[in-house]
Image (cartoon, rainbow, N blue to C red; front, top):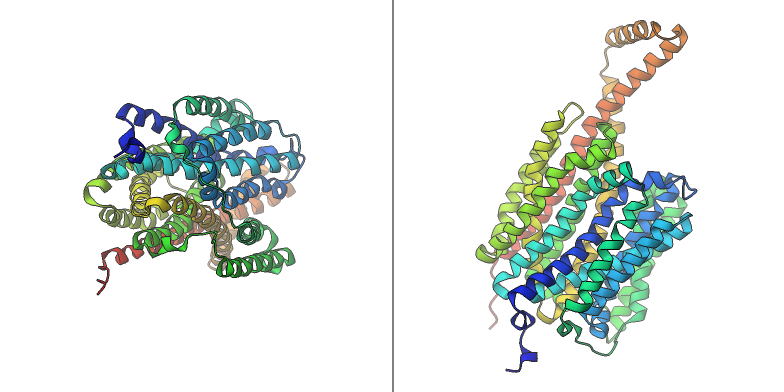
Length: 516
């Protein structure tokens, strides 16, 4: 057999494989870290960008929209440009747009720069996962996804720590500038080291009509999920319009795909049972559950415990380390014992941590105990990413790039839904528990509390001010207790979605029907 016909993993030695892995994972880690490292500095951008809290949220929304819509470009662009070139284009675009974000002087510049950065991330992550899957032999695919999972899961958990440190010791703009030396290093190494065998090219065949309608469906939906809580959901004409535009885009996309001879999406990948199950697990467990928890934990530390951004990051560091540490070993075990068996173990671990342990976090939980309670969750998440990715990709063959792109599209969309659900649930539960606490208050207890508070405060301020302060203090205590209960409820609800997703594993144990 000619060398060119051999699989890529047979054409490179172990040293080359290790170097390629370093290059690809460094770029991936940089890109995915940016999804959460920026979140913690968004409030600090308001004054320099001359906007308010609602305006600055477009910094995140524009990134998500560009990344999600960019993912379905990748399969066609890979055929034209090759994996190597598209990966390097993604790194270059991400690095240059990071510099533009750091130098942005107003909101419009930042939104444009973040959109380009999101597109760069889409190119990086989807091509990187395909490269990693291609350079490892079949018996080590799990290890490949374990290494990739370290980046995908460890990076977002590390984001608050890195963002807090850079903001506290430097400036919020360094959250973007930190990407420049890393991006430059990856581009230089990639140009000289990434093998040209990743450059297989074909003519461009792309369904622009379907893609346009798919973008019309995706972008308004993401904006709706991002702005829904602020606008009052469907009480707002703006949100209702976005919903109708999104539905219109989806209907037209479906019609276009039915009538087109060249589909935008290769729907035969969903006939592969392992891939179909993995997509469902990704949507429910990763998107609607894990991303809720990623969103809620920093809020718990900052809003309820009143920690600084850096303190929040440091409290999440052990959690992040355990995700990365466990991911590699979960990948190796997937190769040895099978992905579905490792995911069964993960289902038990995730149930224990998300339904039982994490909802124990409340206002009174000591600092060290919060760290100890999140470490088992990190262990649980580490056993999730590698086996579910390997399960999805192992049988895709030449359709791997399409499968990977759609997998990450589900990650973005599921994460957006998860964040919206978490925000809505948390706010509604705070209101519910506030009213509940008010209903069971004892009049004599409240009177005694207010009297003692007023007596103490009168020693340091005028009596009429002390009286107002005592009422405010009581309201603050009641709000903190309401928030504490609300966080516990929302953590538990997030866990339910995860268990629902992992329940789809049962289909993997149902034998396929034999064809006559």
